[in-house]
Amino acid sequence: QVHLAESGGGSVQAGGSLTLSCKASPFTHAGYCLGWFRRAPGKQREGVATIDQAGTIYADSVRGRFTIVRDDAKNSFELRMIRLEPEDTAMYYCAADPRLTIPPMMSGAYSYWGQGTQVTVSS
Image 1 (cartoon, rainbow, N blue to C red):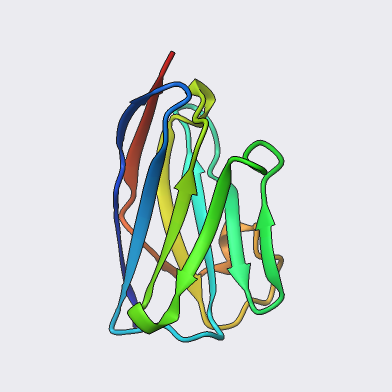
Image 2: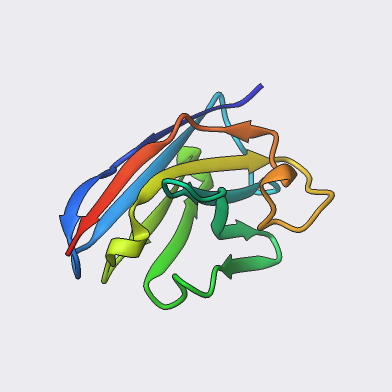
């Protein structure tokens, strides 16, 4: 069993930056696929960014603005967000799985989830 805990959410103005962090315990290893998802009010949860041994994937809406980074030595990974837009307002969740059987941007691919951290971007 892996426990994930997010941190780093908050409120910023449009154009601002935030970095979300996800800490895994007891550990994850380099073979894990890691992802960030978000759910905006009234919308379904959507994939934002994922990282595994094959590389990174980003949603079209965040490509060029968000970066997913992992540090397996620290059992943690981040979502670095710049040029935030009001449309990025959502609850953000980190996720992990040791072996995916479906595409990584699908939320059903992941066994382990954090509780979420709120990001609010004002115009």
